[in-house]
Length: 261
Image (cartoon, rainbow, N blue to C red; front, side):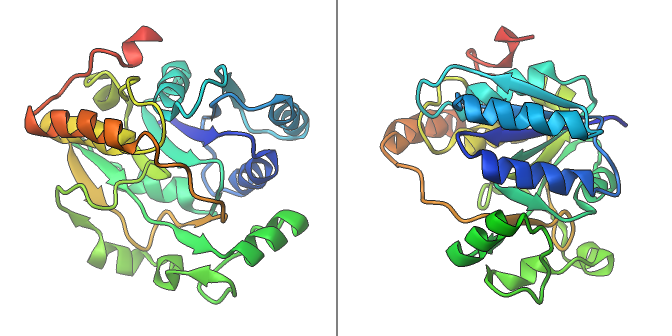
């Protein structure tokens, strides 16, 4: 099964390079790495090109014009460019455990999407990691929050990973699904602009179409570099789109990935 790893990014090339380095140490290398760039300046493009020259990873840079927060559209464009059966989504500030890709693939199952967890790094630990290009984090590391999420254990994962459909904790920073399941609901809704709810609305339509949730614990670990929170200015409008999909049992969005396929 070929895997495409999609990384969203915006004007944070130092964090992106650290994430790309963590991909090089994966026990299972993705077929391709697609950077879904929501309009970053030229320094991000330069950083990606410089990294490509020394890396064996198959990296594709998918860029769109900077016109505000448009993560839904950026992800759609990247997924449309993918050539794999299976899609893993992360953000460009997530350092990956060496078995991250392997864990997602091992847990992939027809009729399900996977929702993983994350470990939060403090501001000071993030600054040090970016300065030293450090990727070595574990349960025992200093400067991490929600520490239990840093435990990697196949035994515990089998015990605590659950198949249950609910919307709490939906995050596209650690999510995977079969590409056909995504295109069957027309991907993410491009109507979402500004931060908030584009991931939850996507999952509502997946659930409505019969694709169930597998909540993965103690596998597919990632360490989230600290950053300031995004503005919530568009949240009210986005909540309305989300609630409409929820109330109307929506399976398909009109303004979706088919524009780029």
